[in-house]
Length: 162
Image (tube, rainbow, N blue to C red):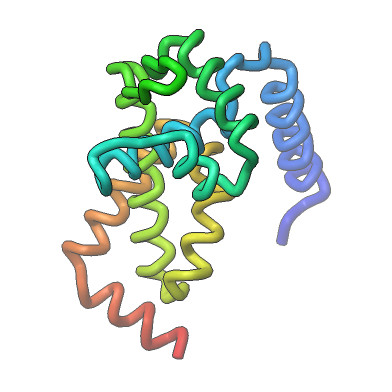
């Protein structure tokens, strides 16, 4: 049984964690920026290019909002953007987009391994992917590989959820 001291310790730890995260200097890079880079990367892979109108469609935002964000991403050196001439991800932008896509893939694979349907898993991943520490992502990938190497464990887990 958990003692009051252990409960207090866990709550103190949790509060300190919240304090630490909120006390950090706010990054100029936002989850919204990550979403844009991810969509741009996906469009380039799918169509060979990305244009503001397509970004607007997939992000469900107005074209002027897209233009404003593209200018910001260009200023921050995540993309090369010239109005009316298109855009390209810079090396930095590609690296971030690839990291986000990898997190997305890992999380999606993990949630689907747990038996969560693809639609729900994708929705959940969109809320989680931007908030994982790289150490957590690395451990998650290792755990997925471990589960894949032990199909009997995964099978047993799935049977217990039936």
